[in-house]
Image (tube, rainbow, N blue to C red; front, side):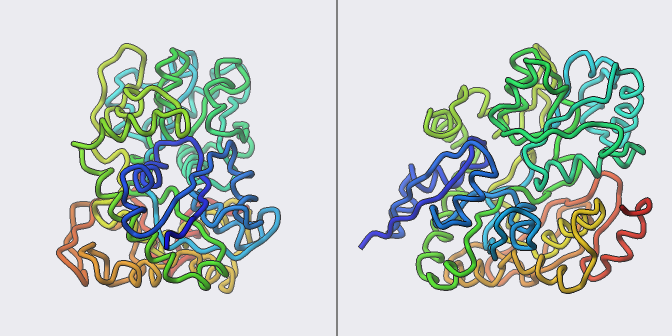
Length: 404
């Protein structure tokens, strides 16, 4: 008997694994029928999951924590046993603003720390506080943007205006002059560049390499009550993710995502980001960033609890939640490596033996212990060279400027 699942998503490239699982038969092979429900905003998607209108959702990782910690409307215990991808976002700014930045585009993207200082100088030359669009207060993009800005002495709550708007409306808002730039998942940054409205300023992959992005989120009570269905879904997603990561499939994947039911943007634009070919300025050659977005390799889907705790540390840093060991434990428990291991125990998918690691400490490819075949983790460094030890959160926070 086929099990029918409703899953909410937004029009973004990193819905790829869900789309591939549905369109390429990976879900069907596990006895699942997926109904993918396109949603406009993260707030609406959150509500659909919390109120049980869908069984699962593509979700911003920090939003899953925020809902569980009671920082968002209608608190609910959520669980994330699977990451849908890492990185894949980009900060773009209006072409006039970008004139004050490093004009060598490869150098600009390769040196986020230097570009942050250029950005600080550009603010002083701008006619007002720049308005930067973010897709949600509790998004990985917004937290990385705050981290990046602060590295150059920019106060993200004082020196710029952060305005929340759905990803699909960012390009329109930029064209209307309502914002001066935005940070969002692809293909929206590339769409703004393609339209001649903006230039790429920084990419998430260079701010935090292999930084957590979207997760597959469930209501915890549903997850616990439906272990077999959960496991089958995760097995289907793991196969779909491997298919999505294969460069030979990028053209087909881009065609799938270009469908009006999903991302509804030109396939060529989508394929560029999937392949890590970033056009930073209209008419300029693409800049190769082969790790711009990952779906499967290097244990990308594995839900490291240390990454959930890094998110928690940033929520504390910006005064969004209190520093409390019980809250930290609650935040860390949103990510569920135990479910991931259970679902894929009989597969050949390599997975780490540990559930936490020191984030930012891997500077070159590293072989690690795995209960399946050999596993190599790629570099995960932060652009400023800091490392995050999940067992020393207070020391990590103390290394920044005074907290809010």
